Amino acid sequence: MKLLTCHADAHRRSLETEVLSCTARGEQHLVELAESVLFPGGGGQPADHGTIGPARVLDAEEDGERVLYVVDRPVAAGRAQVTVDWPRRFDHMQQHTAQHLITSIAAAEFGWQTVAFHLNPERSDIVLSTVPDADGIRRLEARVNAAIREARPVRPRLIDPADMEREGVRSRLLPAGHSGPLRVIEIEGYDLNTCGGTHVSNTAELQAVRFVGLDVQKGTGRLHWLAGGRVLADAREAQARSEALTRLLCRGPAEHVAVAEGLLGEVKDGRRALKALELELAEYLGRALAASEAPTLHRDTADLGVLGAIAKAAAAVRGDRLMLLTAGEPEGVFLLFGPGAGEAGPAVAEVLGGRGGGRGQRYQGKATANQRRAEAAALLG
Image (tube, rainbow, N blue to C red; front, side, top):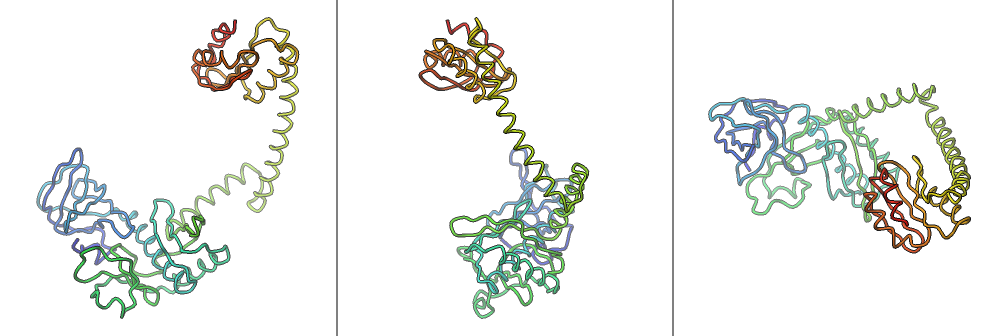
């Protein structure tokens, strides 16, 4: 693929160029341009979005040395204005340059090698060859932000592959069959790396980097992070959540955790008390079911645990009876309990529009038509 205007000047947002071809592909079209500010993707960075004349650019594809832009409508041959979706592009520039800086400092000053990089829509990540501890992550974050404040220039340039070792270029495997100059990105004093992506022109444009999570995977650490505008957006969201919690809890941010812990404790206590009451109620309901002429019972709100407790209480009084217990309507659960439950279960489940399983004296499952419980009960004999 030839180098484009976007490779030489990532800050340029538009240009006028020639539309060389436009080919239909289903409801989309593929456009080839003589020149472009639209980054075609590569190096872990997604392709740009933007416009070519009246058409929206959705993606880009490589076809040998050509770049074909995927658009939502046909574009006439001739001159056309090409414009990049700048907020999206600049976000990618910040994330990608931040990755270069994080990777270089992690390797040079901490001995942590980067084995993978993912520029994701919400937060990016690098996979490290080791699992850093919390203190190490804090120190790396502080060091990266110190480098950002140094306002080091970031420059793209071309070098001869023969000069890579002499210049200390950091590089992964080159594409098979590559020949000619290599494009490298230099962060002055920190990194020189082969890369085809778009980058900021100065580390100060990164604004800040914040690490937001670590996943451990087979001896490697996937370190999640935010850079630039994403740090500010995350801070705004956190502020909005904090203000909402302040209104709900009637306490300031410093007390949110303590108040939430107290409320969770009350919820747990309440659930335990409710469970005890449900089991006590199950005893009464079970005795009432045993004394009833109808072998069925329905509760609007219950789970299989409560239904089981009711059935056992009923069976303790009248163990020779097959009973149908249901909860929820029309969707919910059902329980067959008593002699022959395993044999009658599949037919009952079919009437209730559900599926279940069991054997012996217990058959249970989920239902989608509990309103047909009377029809199902008729199968019990």
